[in-house]
Image (cartoon, rainbow, N blue to C red):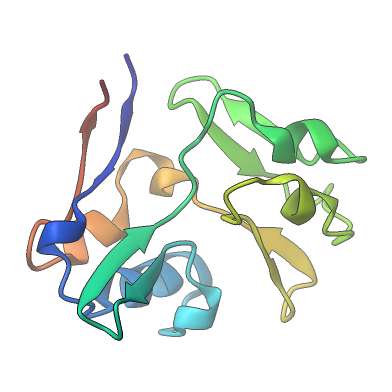
Length: 137
């Protein structure tokens, strides 16, 4: 069993603190466009759902990458993008059935959740407990 992000839509208020913390942790700026976690709103804003990479076992993004820029962090089980190998072709973004790997136009590389090396910034920032990190079922 590995640790994972546990997302509880019932507790999400769409405050976007997770997006802000993620973008600051990974890009050094408060810019939700560069966040690896997104909050989607449904029912005209009455329901919010935080969503990010599930670190799926299939890892279609990794299998599709022509430069082998996506590898597995053996300790955490995360799929990690190696910026030195990524050529920004976006094949991985098309391969991901969940739409959770995105192209960063500023860097010309793709970005995805890597669980902040085991200390997810989104978890620390979430004021309602909608995002937690722990043992997955």
